[in-house]
Amino acid sequence: MKTIEIDDELYAFIASQTKHIGESACEILRRLLIDEPGIVTTVVTSGASIPAASAAPAQAETTPEPAAETPVKTTAKAKPSPVPAATATAPSVSGDDLLQCVNKDALSQFDKRVDQFLFILQQIYLQHPGDFAKVESIVGKNRKYFASSKEELLKSGSSTNPKAIPQSGFWVVTNNNTAKKLAMLSQVLQILGYDDKVVKSVSETFDS
Image (cartoon, rainbow, N blue to C red):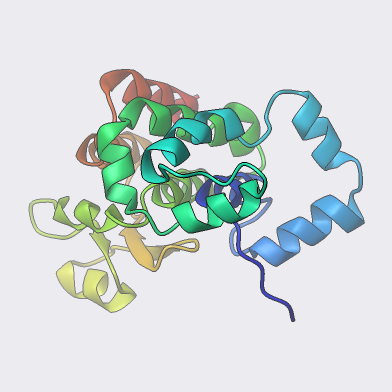
């Protein structure tokens, strides 16, 4: 098994190609590059490629002396930059990145509403791995909605039916109707700094 380094935007793109809950990044790449060759080319030419252009300004701010002849190394050095700072200074860019991943085509891969709900939360986490823990402040009258363990949610109330948000290390209560899930998604987006336009777009995509 070999290990490679990729930036957050490439990772988010790979995750957006998930076909089922629990599919690893390695499995996704194998499917795209080996089992279903040609899909990556189709994605790129259709305009759904990794938003490299939007990533360039952030790199310039965090790396004042870019090495033009080795762009890959420059990106790798910029990777440790704190994610919360980037999302705080450029929420609109993060919103564009999220909306590229959360769309009707992506959600159509899932038959169950709960799996669509978990997929959206996964994409939000991938944009904010550093400050996603803020969502733990979202609570109901008698129970928590997010936690870092299944046991914590089970203790907070009955019939919570907690499920893991893929690749995040966080769990969420899923024993609620679509309207409540929409409200939870809106709260998550607002807490992480998204404007009303992004909140409305994600909500409408999920509700449709």
